[in-house]
Amino acid sequence: MFGGEDGSPDLLKVTLDVLDPAICNKSFDVEIRTTNMLSRGIDSQMLCAGVLNGGKDTCQGDSGGALLSPNRELCVFVVLGVTSFGKVCAFANSPAVYARVSEYIPWIESVIP
Figure 1 (tube, one colour):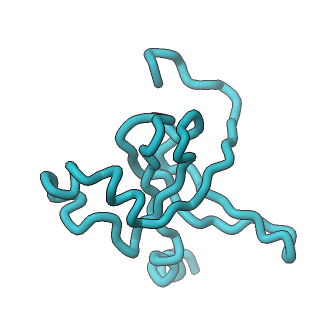
Figure 2 (cartoon, helix red, strand yellow; figure 1 turned 30 degrees about the horizontal axis):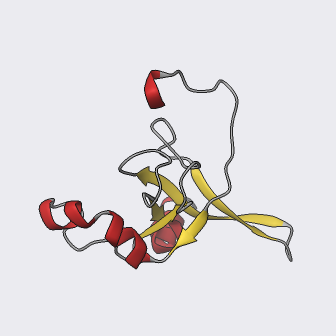
């Protein structure tokens, strides 16, 4: 995994900030200009999260994992996103991109009765 190390056998968690799409677009500027995948930048089906100073992040092997937010009033967690991709792991100014689950609720409800 990261740095040639094996992943953890234990489930881990990290606290990240959900970031403004403009911050993410700046981080992915080269990819936005040069690839089809991000030709429009971060869109409504995506969200970014990370720690701008670096040191905490999702990484290879975390794809498909949930980005959760606590709803203290209801005493539950809400799934905001699903880990999708990033440039590098835990570097400063390099947030990761997540699939925004709320954009897929109609599809989810059509598949899961």
